[in-house]
Length: 253
Image (cartoon, rainbow, N blue to C red; front, top):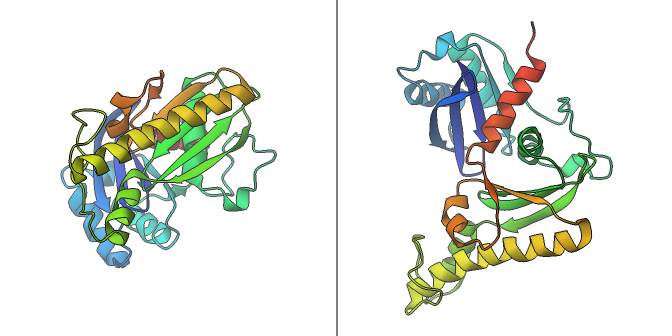
């Protein structure tokens, strides 16, 4: 078994692979207050019954620097093996000739590694998490740029927090295009707004780059996927698949 760990701003996703098959996927909150022993205890509880100590190895990427060494240390303690931490010094095979890599999140790089293993470029990779990121790969398999948008949940939280008469909203599938009360108006506005952003941005990209494949991933993607009016490739576990690919690339014989 291989453990793959994606440390995001909201959750830490832990996936266990048996060969190419994802055997399980579990999540923990990205709790910055937990210390090293706390993370070891949390992961031990999360992985109870999975025989983590027999894992062949583990690999992680992170967009929360303070959590990276804590989670890596906990994984080492649980498995007895070193962790491959994918960072800016990790050779990924992805060509990035013009982007400022000092400000590039490794989650976007890992997404691209996985997407390129499955689809022919050019590609537009949307990852809908706490933020919605867009990463574009040209026909030469080069990462050429992208966008970062407020995520669905973040947008709704900000709206509720800053507007006195707008309540918190739990996303549900829209019953119609237009809402008929405040909650449904907020819900539909967030969902159709996100769908419209993906459709509009990709239409503009195709005006510049020609036809491309749109790859959609991230925890918020299932809310928007049914509303899209253009074809997309939905990959719910793109980040973990990319981590597995990088672990195999750097696995010592």
